[in-house]
Image 1 (cartoon, one colour):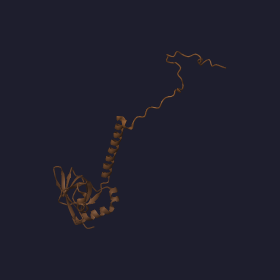
Image 2 (cartoon, one colour):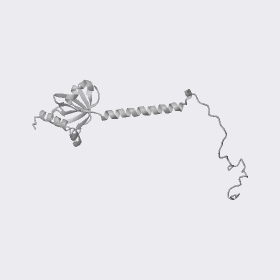
Image 3 (cartoon, one colour):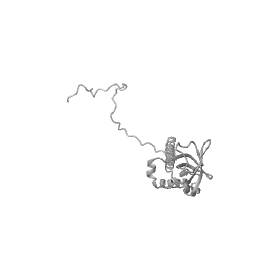
Length: 187
């Protein structure tokens, strides 16, 4: 039998206490199975982990609900909003109307004015500065909610976006016709 001189002689063992002492490659000693733990003795870490997961799922659900709810903000014409006032309650929504000439009054916190559409008029209290293009006899979209007999708004949108025009052509024509009829313009 040829013995490779670079390998140590297997018949000679190192000192058992030295760091390079030979160790068995495979331990085949039989072991007993670990004792089963009762289901009622789960560790506090398990409860903490389950609680953290449930908390994260709950927070994610709240964020999704809020995000989807605000993304689905629909707008009504003034006459539609007034007709559905009971159903809308204090819910936030968008409302389209035409600013009635002679009704714009600046306040300490914003501006008060009247919007009209169809056969309905509604007093509006807006908090914050109105946009630069805000003026009488123009269609606006207001975001806010009913408070008593008034509509309290915190955002005024002026219609001048071409993508909005494309998506809502029928509503714009109706709003423009309504604004023209109020100002005596025939078209």
